Length: 487
Ligand code: N01
Image (cartoon, rainbow, N blue to C red):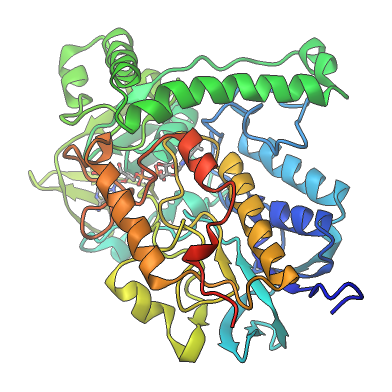
């Protein structure tokens, strides 16, 4: 307790990716200095540390994909490459004094809420307690390996895109890739030229929009150096455009959706010359139902002579390659699994037990839900960043983290001031919130007949179904009646 009777919290931040770095900066700005930042890996950067596949880039415009308080004049392209994004996060963490505070190579293994404190146990055998836990563990970080018979029998080189094997040179090799999502499209566009033969195993075609990339010249960069105002204005312009096109379209606004559809269909029509190939690449579901792919290299790659698009289903994998259901064997030297991620794990496999020993596995066994994406009843003083129903179609996840971090800080402020003994949303508030989300889903494009990582086992999208502005407005101030009152 400090002199003015405000409680000063200790906080553990789990993960030093984009959100963890942000949380650390903002907590320190709020005068909260008792911080422990645990990072399971030996480097910060989260998704941008893990995804090093050829072609990795962010399909959100770079000047919008930065913290609002620290633009980056150095981007080389409109769509920043993964290594530049990773460098940006490292620089920001260093500039704001966060990097030196990170405990690398130390994962949080257990987190138990006992007598008003979180008792933590880490992979290095350290035990300590804190008032708050901020789980900044990201959404898409558990690779999905496809459930295909014989997968492990393949004798060539095989890896998931998030675990790229840089020791294998693809030049001249017979390469297969399973999947045609955002990741696969970036990989294929980048590796097609060097492979001997590249076979793309497509289960479902995807809609793709082309937004021209742009190289930023030295003059462009120089004009932005030291100009946070200009960088902010640029970011706002992109954000405005994304909000009013893709984000509005997927949540049911007719005109933006019509524009997205027109852009995707036109892109396919104009880019792919052969009608038979075009037919194979044409989805049978509405544009935006699966996350819209923004890419300008895939269609060119798929039309190369050394690339073939296989749409016959995979029957099994053998030591030599992929056997499709028509009995054909596709012999391969390398098999790349661009099969996506499991989006409902969040901070798991960490063992998380809340009030009275309630286990997150039991709570989420029925359905992965939270109150305002961030708070889970039964787990006081625990904040899940980018939790279920955070994502807003094709928008910058950094902007989402900033809004949620401000919200969390306001909740911690209530605890510091003693208005809340513990920050815990009530089960009723969580239920009301999820009913409200469900009510909005019917008009979104995500429920119009496709399968995607957005959907949970019940077919409910784990997305925010309303507008960006509405989301920001609703998170501006915590609604205290949704939390357990102080005793
Ligand atoms: O994964 P995906 P991703 N047999 O789940 C196929 C973000 N991201 O890594 O469509 C055959 O989209 C599956 O087929 P189907 C972004 O949010 C961002 O590409 O299910 N195929 C699909 O084609 C994105 O949405 C950037 O029929 C199988 C593919 O694998 C998210 O990450 C860049 C299969 C998986 O596609 C995930 O994208 C890249 C099987 N058994 C990614 N199992 C940015 O630029 C799966 N598939 C910000």
